Length: 153
Ligand SMILES: [Zn+2]
Image 1 (cartoon, rainbow, N blue to C red):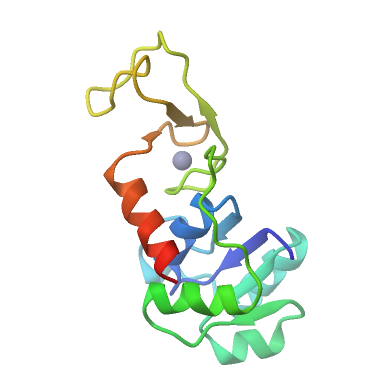
Image 2 (spheres, rainbow, N blue to C red):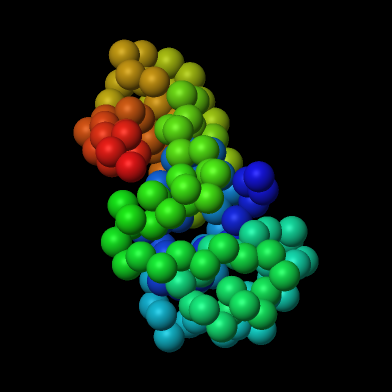
């Protein structure tokens, strides 16, 4: 199973879940504005050049791509169930590897590091930082929400 994925512009929420499961889940939009959608040809080209499987809700795109999985559901929990049925392992990573926001690689923060005010004390709580966007992560309530959602699939 390929763990390098490219998600179309309708699957932004799903990308966050997949990254937390350790997938290299790129999203076609850099921002969140659907008007920035690069179009099917550009998506197919990018998938081939970066060796990724396309996940899409667009039948035409899925049919014309060499390596694509068509998702039919609108809700993220149903999309996760479709991926599970297709054989994707949807287990939350014990050690986070990917930034849920931008798909950058994350690294463990030293216990003595100083963190932004929104983060817990790294001496008491394991924290990770994204090498790309700088966001700090820990296994807080959001983590538990994602875990319970994945377990319900
Ligand atoms: Zn990031």
